[in-house]
Image (cartoon, rainbow, N blue to C red; front, side, top):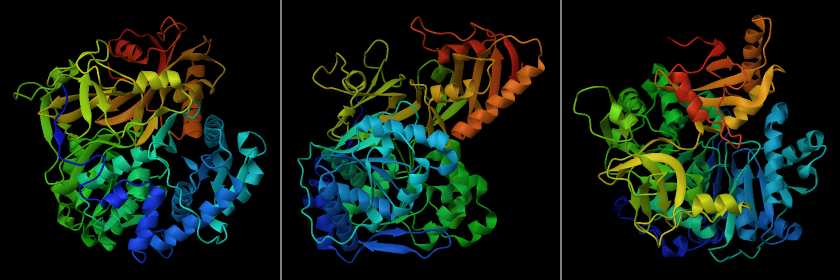
Length: 593
């Protein structure tokens, strides 16, 4: 069933000047610098330091300096890896790439105390993207000399853009919008990164949708706040591109600062009278749990008009708790705006209506387990689902049976398929997976090509309800975690553990997602060894991946099921464990019988 569509422009946003909405972002910045040179574009707020403000003209000039430097040192359409902490240096480097016609590849900077975890991913990205330069801050470039001794990152030039000299005006690249602008690497796997190829048109089309969905009138973003990492889709599009697109101010904060003390987010919202901000569901939950009453008494959230919530499953309990706690602070329920998206679609796929509160649908829990979203009749267990809104004019949303390829009926759970101008070209240098994921077709719409999202959902009255995932990605506190990364790390914890014979999966405990893992172990005469193995596994995964394991189980050889080609059948193992069909040698903590 194809979803209904909300009004809203795609190729050209009805609320954005055509001169911006049909440009590349390098040209859009030049336009803003000419039309509103003295208006603030970005402000960096760092705990304990003075705020740093950059106008559109200042950003354009600094981007021009970076662009001129890059044109001296790199080929046009070359790929540059951006390694910056979140902040203005990153923004200047990104727009410098846009204006020079350089393809940006973004990644978090390496962490010296966790090189064993961060370095393999960086090297994999650098190799896969075939970068010709690393753009970074001068202090990172100097530090890198001490911990990069070999590998692909030592074979390319490192360019410190924050110390780039003034070069004067550089010609702003005006590429065909169908050309590649950005490589967005998926965030979960450290050993098998996939680069999503985004064009200039992808970036602009999605920004047009966001401007419409969030109600940003021309030059009317007013004040947005982003603490989201700019290396991933939500932080990049909403926090770095949207201010130039909509012509408004974005206040930037450190992600780590907010995660450590979420009150800082709300304090900044109050202090600067911010109108638009948001994040994944876990961020709102953190505020409910960790913002104290003293903070609540002195903050004013009445200017918060759009509190977007997406990037992971949205929980009705979180919405209710946030509204209850911060309603006395001026927060309004209708500020919440839910949505659904993914990097392969640039970002936004669906959005709730800005003028309405999020749709909460109480459904029959047993029917949901059976693959149907049915309104509760008041009998039996129930679950409240949160609607993620509708898609937009010019786009198509379909729910498809992932095995049979047929369109699902109203309320039937299936895989979410999407077709629209935001869909990326595919995965960089990965034609087989590109064809599988980006080239889907179903017989009811043979002329359209769809993106298979790997997510499960249903359409009810035209609104999308996301209920789970086909792919075995685990979302924990806003992080996308791949099971095979956990398994790889855990299996290295002890020589008693068998390689490629473990299954990691998510468990819901008291309404919260937790990580569980079962591992095959060689026999031992001393049962105390099992306790030592489990302790070693817990420590190794925490050290390698900074992830807490909730449950660990040890089992004998041949217990973990695999396909005939040797792939771990994680979902089957989880079901067998729940049914009592798995014999464990040891577990921690013990499950309830």
